[in-house]
Image 1 (spheres, rainbow, N blue to C red):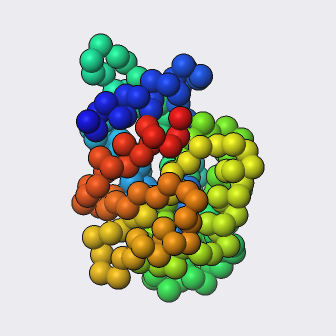
Image 2: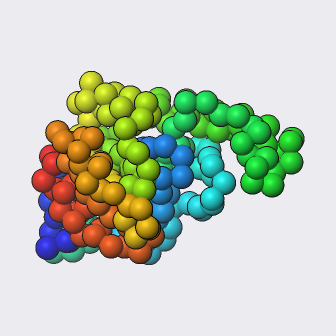
Length: 207
């Protein structure tokens, strides 16, 4: 059932473009890279990028190209685009709280700011998106509202992924209540819990 849903989603998108571009969007440290890694490992056995508790570990768009699924006589290809975390502001002093020196923190802040601009520009180029939110945090914030508004305005299909359901304090009901008109899937990208539900939802809502 899981693989049939993935095939349905990717095959139909593939008819529109040679390589399906799937963007992973959200605030910092919500688990975008962990989710991208989970999907890439499932499909090709190779991760996308590194993860860290320090905000803005991903400071440039990381593309995992030629993620190919071969089954049932089909060969489907997509590009996974792991986006830098979106933030309202980037303050180098926040990085110093994680043990970074001032110079390193300032460099990271500049790179993070450039990454945010790059991620937003990529909204012109993606075919579909996963909007990842941390289900232990309040999902009603400026970043999520702005992201969803932009995706709707550009007619980009998307699914909201309520991540980190394995953690204490996860509240997926709150995510659904805040976004009642959008598809929401609750998963743990870290443990792989409910990933098959996400694949099913992609097939249903993003086509």
